[in-house]
Length: 131
Image 1 (cartoon, rainbow, N blue to C red):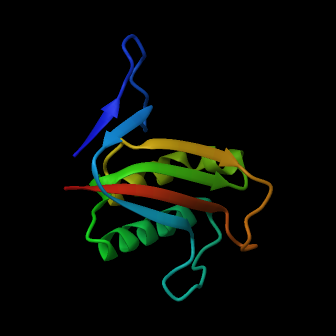
Image 2 (image 1 turned 180 degrees about the vertical axis):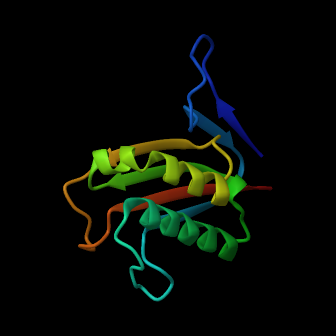
């Protein structure tokens, strides 16, 4: 079971949690990018790559016997913050479709580049499966 952390007097964040407390089996998911299960990019748009990265996270969760509601932490690395912000509506829809739970401690960081030249986003995640 996880519990979002919201210090007294702080406004509730929109689209993430300030922190999460959880107890159970921890699952660490390496950075996932916007390529499919064969290692191929199907699109060069930010929103499509973000959706695919989230699909990849869900696949790894399933392999661990976990589901999206077990996610407690995500770090998004983006190559262009303006492209990320311009894609917010589509990225938000993909997030709702695939993850659905915003009680996740999240950070987003703009980076100069990712290792795969075509990658526009890479997402690391941590999940906790309740005992």
